[in-house]
Image (cartoon, rainbow, N blue to C red; front, side):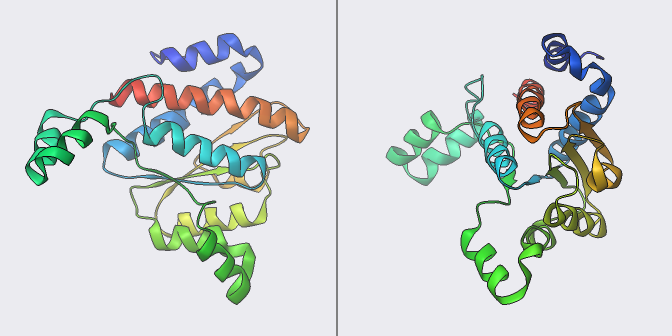
Length: 211
């Protein structure tokens, strides 16, 4: 699997994912290139996939297996802003990759659900936050979750890249996405069991590259 150590280890540990190795690499490269160009990752999913979205954001926004100390120049700026508190920030803050789970905006989401249309709560956030250099990670075990698919449509209209994490036959999201990992299971919980090692490997590879 190219030179990507963590992605190679993923398919060694989970041989069922070997047929998806090219797609996994492509998803990694698209997210990596977005971060490298100053873009961000927006993540959408329902139920267990919503928890996965939050999990991914957590792994990317702080140290995963590395400590990720802030650069010396940034540490100095913290101290210039306030010598005492700035030192605390310089010592404790960690390098972050800008990843946002679209599942946590409770006030916005419930207001949009009540006032407009609940199917569009992710699409509204993509429309508001998304820029051309960003990536939307759409997680859906069936590949057909309507609110996630509508977010993909919004992302495409905004000029964003779309990557999918699905199961079964990939569904509409798999067909819409620029790259999609379709894990080889059909039952929801089994799909989710394979999603976790996939996104852990992606996060490890991203952390290795940037930190």
